[in-house]
Length: 495
Ligand SMILES: C[S@@+](CC[C@H](N)C(=O)[O-])C[C@H]1O[C@@H](n2cnc3c(N)ncnc32)[C@H](O)[C@@H]1O
Ligand SMILES: [Zn+2]
Ligand SMILES: [Zn+2]
Ligand SMILES: [Zn+2]
Ligand SMILES: [Zn+2]
Ligand SMILES: [Zn+2]
Ligand SMILES: [Zn+2]
Image (cartoon, rainbow, N blue to C red; front, side, top):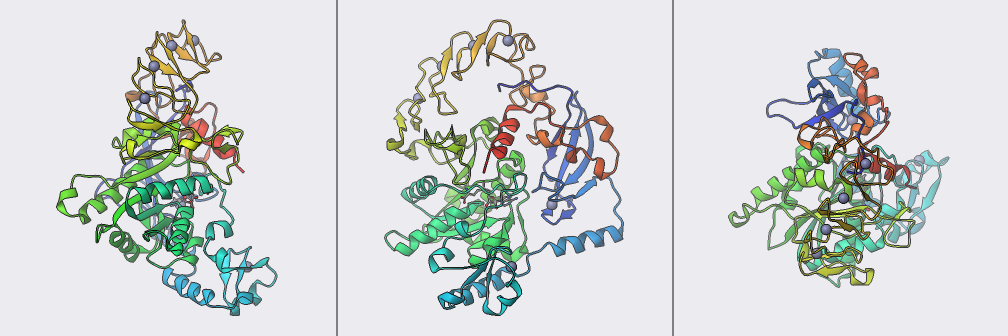
């Protein structure tokens, strides 16, 4: 980490759900349990908060773990949760879609204000809204039709460029996968369906799990589930989770792979927990010979979360491929954008099997047995291709490792750092790689279980007060950890 963390801050830890305890629900399904952690690492009071939203404006749920909640309050909560449900069930959406698809062209209308496909009887009710005609081709590309939800702290809908979505699809098809579980990847699902229509390749099946139920309008029950990937919650209940179960069953040798592209501000640990649960479900459904294997997956996330991700899911490894987005213009691949994309693929597919495009400068390192960025030169001393960010890193013989090109070895700190680093705070120790603090090691880090600390920074005064004084809702970001700071910057620089 290239950042020092201010040591007076408190962290918030995410606690994995314990068996037998049911968490209260917000409109986004079961909430997650968190714990405030003091500077000495001592733990504080636990509370439940929304799994999906990091901003109080999006979901204001808050409850101390030991709160006694009145019946009246529970009822009010349930009513609120109900009111946030989609108007139609997935089956109703599908019926509507089929009706819509059979309409003559001049009756096919989409309301831009309400973001819904309109059936003939509904045009009048939307007459004062902006409505647009829809072609069959548009109907097949919902991700281009729906306006991306760029709410940074909730949806952060960044859509793959053609380059990245085709790369993903070609790679997976080339590996023999015939079923792609798309977790938060609507554009990939769409591309798979378009490719099937061409009838040039063996058809692939796809199921989209996404919290954005606008996509429900375009798909059958077998193609879309309204889903929250931070708590593995199916809004459509058991019928919906059964859809996933049947998708994960590999009949006739149809291999399944999962591709997930969560919002970058999301917590790593709950996501890893969800992906493990999906993998477990998959494993139970397979014949005995694959009982030990993990479900093949690709998790798309910025490279600076690598330590966190590998800590949670050690079977993954990070590839050098830069994933880029249409509506994230600053982070384009290679030299075309102002900056290189920091987003990478984390996968348990053998890295050597994922061929990165030579025409984009990637090359195969025969020692590392994987494809790497053109500038990622193999270091004979470290015996790896060390670069994480696509730039050429250089070896520091004092630190005995390769470092970013902008770093210089500092005699005072006894390590490599940016030239303008806060000097002299480390006493020659490397400190914590989670938060960057030089005063403790990673194992003792109070922020270990959360990279959400940027929005959760607080002071002790908030303890015991009402929800409106809750630490979650008081973003008092001074200095963030490297990863949190960069994730925030990515979100802020978008659009
Ligand atoms: C970074 S975008 C990825 C889109 C992808 N690059 C594509 O082009 O298909 C994040 C996606 O995850 C979805 N999403 C956000 N929060 C979610 C949650 N809690 N559960 C499930 N999906 C979520 C968004 O609706 C969006 O589709
Ligand atoms: Zn919520
Ligand atoms: Zn409307
Ligand atoms: Zn190498
Ligand atoms: Zn080296
Ligand atoms: Zn050094
Ligand atoms: Zn120094």
